[in-house]
Length: 137
Image (tube, rainbow, N blue to C red; front, side, top):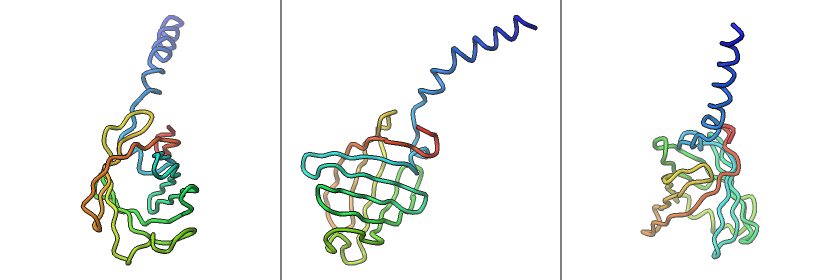
């Protein structure tokens, strides 16, 4: 009995690093806190819940609440809901939709392929995971 307990304890100790190093999935990134940095725009802080995404960029002087709609586990759409701070032009004409697809996911972040219904530009942005709510990352 004692040998079995020691063997079981050793197994848990060996498996702990494997379990804690699990790579996040798209689904595990549906909620949480994230950060984006570019030379052009500075730092954008993102807080995502099941129904909303709040983005704040102090360098550009804005804070916006978006409604979020998940198309599938890795793709979502954002529609501007409320401007908390900044230029009202950010809100667009009420029909603006930003579409994001999460790809190249790692333990530190993911690449967001972003497009919109008001421009043909498709860009990839590196997103850092600050905290993922679903998996406690």
